[in-house]
Length: 416
Image (cartoon, rainbow, N blue to C red; front, side):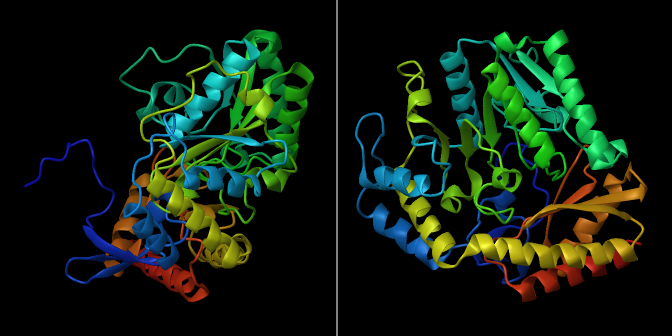
C-alpha cells in the first residue's frame, strides 16, 4: 500500500530501482531496454558516469544557491556553454525548473515586449500542463479539460499533419499557410499578435516534423508583421532529431527558444533563450523562481554538454536514427497494422491502425504490454493512444536498437 495520488497512473508495471545506459532494472534484477528515456529526458542514458560524478561533486559543495539572490559558477558557465550551441542572436538565457514554466516565461516576455495580447499556437501542439501552457495545447483534450475557462488570447492554426489529412506535404503546407493568413483576417490582427509558438517537430500529437516550407512561411509572416517566433524545443531539441536543435533542419531561426528535458540528464532544469535586447523588454520581476538554475542541476547540465560534445551524440542520433527508421520501415512493410512511420533522428513515431488512417489505440496498448513482458519499455501518444514512440537515449548502440526492434516484432506477432 502506498499513498500516491490515484491520478498518477503509470504506463508500465515496472518499479525501477536503478538504471544504467539504455537499461532499467527492478529490485529482483529483471531488466528492460528503456526506449522512453523518461520521455526524452535521459539523453545521455541512465546514470552516465560523467553526469553522476559532476552531480556528486556539486552536492558536497553547494546544493541551493537561489539565483535571484546570488549567482553561482555553474549557472554562469552554463549560459556560456549553451550560447556555443544557440543561434548567434540568442545571447541571453533565463532558467526555470520545467518545460511548462519556461513556456510561460517565454509567453510573458513576448506579451510584455510587444505590448500585444494574442498568441498563435498550432493544432496538435503540446506545451505543458500549467494554465498558459495548457491553453496553447491541443494534442489531446485531457490536458485542457475540467478547468475551463483557460487563458484568453490564444488562436489556433493548422499544423501540417499530412498523414491525418491524407494529402501530399505540398498540399498540406499550402492549406496550412492559407489558413494562417485567414486567421489574421478572422481571429487576430497581426497588430494584436505577440507571438507564434510552434514545435518544429511535434511531440505528443505524434512526432510530425513541420517541414522547411511551413517553418519558413511562419518566419516570413513573423518578420513582416513584427511577431515573435517561439520554438518549443523541449522534446525535439538537444540533439534528439540529429541536429542540436530541431529548427535547424528547416533553416529558420526563432526569436525565442525554449528547452528542457534533455538539458540536464534527468535533473529538473529548463531554459529560455532570446536576444539580450528582447530579454530587456520584459518587466522587472517577471523572470525567476525558487529552484530555477539549481546548482546541482546546472552541474549535471554542464556534464551533459560535455558528454554530448565528446561522444558526438548529435551525429550519433542522426546515424542511429536512420538505422532505426530503416528497421521500423521494414516492420511497416511486413505488418498491416503499422500504417506510418515518421519523425527525425532518435525521435520516431509509429502509427498503429486497423486500416489506413484508422487509429487503433487498443492494439497499440496490447503491443506495448507484450513488449514490456519481453523486456522492452516504450510509450504511446496520439489522440487515440495509437502511436508508439521510439525515444532511446542518444547513447544507444546499434545492437540495442536491433534488439529493441526484434523484441517489438515479437510483440506484434504475439498480439496478431
